[in-house]
Length: 369
Image (cartoon, rainbow, N blue to C red; front, side, top):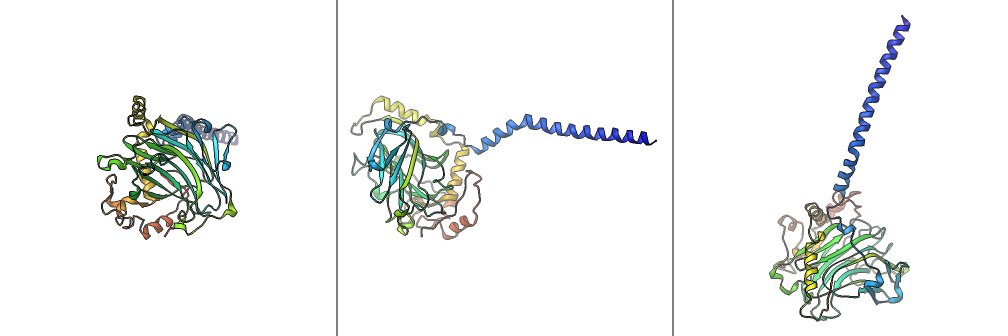
């Protein structure tokens, strides 16, 4: 009797084991068949659709660029793919592209100076100011120095035909620490639009329209990168100055890209080849913003933009013609174009370790007022 009970117990145990084993195998089979799909889905959600920015052709420094100033403070790598710009108590430094371009896509991976960098400006921009002194065009990334542990601030700007009295700057906080690792910063400038990118995220788009007239950049420009002391205005309006105890301040550039048609700025009519290359720029993948990227751009601007000239009614009683006014967004800004006090502090209270839409660390803000 005991033998039969023991046998039945063993049978039940075996059946339980078999059933449990089958459940585990079913789960394993599900993971094996579905995991690749889940990984792809995760990567698809994480990475914007425009992967072209990850695979752009780059140019060695010596083939596309030359020193601008402070040459002893320009340090090139052995393979000529990376260049450092240094700022010390004696001088800053800079470089420029060897050619000017009728239009183009200009890009570099950059790592900004670390530690205390108040008053130090790193600029990555296009201009023709060396040729057209009073009627120059310009497109800017300017990084405005930083106090250790605070969010880096930067601005983008556009000038056309010397319209410096009609600056079109926007200011933002970076959602990551740009001194820890390289990030790609890009400027697309075509006959129809201008887009500023950070990595694969478009942060600003300007569509050309007839009302802009000559304010839209239209003359060939070169690409520049510089580091210099702007203690009188850069960090918190000049409240924090450059401290050379932390020098040298080093900005590092790699994977430099110059896509466009080299042109003589003094020629009134550009060659047909430039027309063809300009058309190619307009049709390039990075010249269009996908719905997912547009949502990322909207989220970036909502969370990280703290000044917009479009909402600065003290400066412009009528917004410039390229401004697309969002009534709900406008409510968040004062007549000075800056975020209202409660908006700034709401963003500070809602700090999160990772931005859901962009996927990066969100650092605490430092006020400029």
